[in-house]
Image (tube, rainbow, N blue to C red; front, top):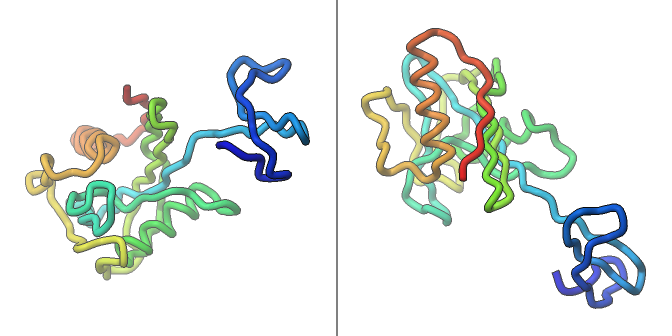
Length: 175
C-alpha cells in the first residue's frame, strides 16, 4: 500500500504502539491499515466413490484440475462461500457439508478451508471459471495435473480416511 484509503495521504511502515509487526500507518489521519490472510473456501464434492474436480479456465494454473474453491467474500460465512464457489465453478449444489481440512499457507498469507460434501442434486456442469467438470475415482485422479498443493493434500487425506471410514478435521500448515 502506498496511500491511505481514508484520506489519501502517503503511508509509512512502522510498528504501532502495543503491536509486534510492521503495519502501513497514515501519519496524517493516524489510521493503521492491517493486511490479513485471505480465506479460500471450497468443497470436496463426493458422488458415490468418486470426487468432483474442475479444470481451471482462469489463471493461475489454467488447464489444471482443482476442487471447486475460491476467495471468501465479505458478508458471507465460510460455508456459504464454499457453496457459492461450488455453484460458480461446477454448477453444483451441495449438502451435508462438514469442515474437513484447514490448510494454512503462511508464505502467501492464505488459509484454505475445505468442506467434505455431497451433491444435493444430480447435475453439474462447467461454470465460467471451469473448462470442464468431471467425476474421478481414486485411480483416475490426475495427480500430476492438480493445480494446487492444497488440493493434492485434501485428496490424499480423503482417500486415506475413506479407507478407515473416519473423517476427522485436518489442520495443517504447508511451508
